[in-house]
Length: 373
Image (cartoon, rainbow, N blue to C red; front, top):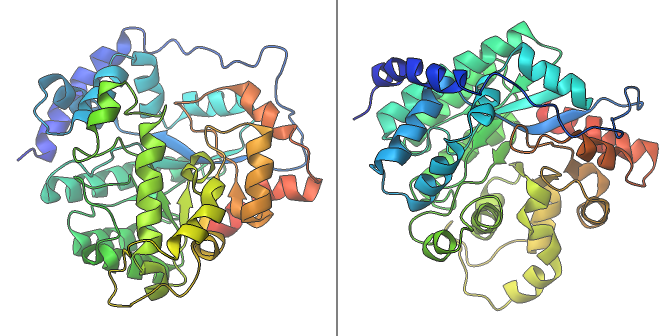
């Protein structure tokens, strides 16, 4: 079993790796197209990744050794591990990140532990890492309270311990929700053994951000073979499946106040709402709560229990479509920093045609409401 001591021992290694090319930060693509500095609303970016240097070292080490039975993880971190500038940006939750925010007109980031977070490890290691990473990001929030807030990492491998850590992070550290990096060692949250996490989060009145991972071993084959395991397609396929599985499990009838956030335009689910409603009538059920049917149509759960963000989808047709089918109160802005770091995308979102009131909801007030800012 890997221990926290090993992670700390490896921290020096990532420092050396990042020193080679990792400290020269390229400017975002803002030439001639810089975001407005006074748009009349705050820009709150709601899906912004971070990870401590020692954890990034461990991801790279596991991928290089291929000692972890997850082809998607190995493929993704073999690739990302060779990008020192990206790793440096992920690890920085201080002045350099704030400089990037200033360059692109972002007022606040909601920080989330990057995928796969702690969810690839054994339960004891995952619980320890959830605690230490939450403490670390909470310190950054205390230092820069007007620029950062954060979501709590937790280890679904041990639901009872996850609940304790979530409660600690919300009550004692002031965090604003929970980040779950989708599947946990191939398991989805539609399994009732995880539902005490849903119960606790509902009671705390905070959301779960369901962020992508590469597809688990049971579904990864066709994706890895074609170079589709990551953000090009595998992420949205895996997380869209996960979100729909939760919806059809009956969990949202059991926990009607539960709120989930999906990035990347809702991982395509809003596009399919008509078909989901139509085909759900005759589909084989995924009810796991002892009931015989869902209380509502899939589209109703999507509009009442899900928020969607614009991370990676700075495209006017998509944003206006999301607002039209989900409602303007259910769509949030996100950049997806540092994986997508483009000032032009901020400007493109600024320029989407909508009322000033709706634009302020998109960038600011919807985030303030769902995350209790």
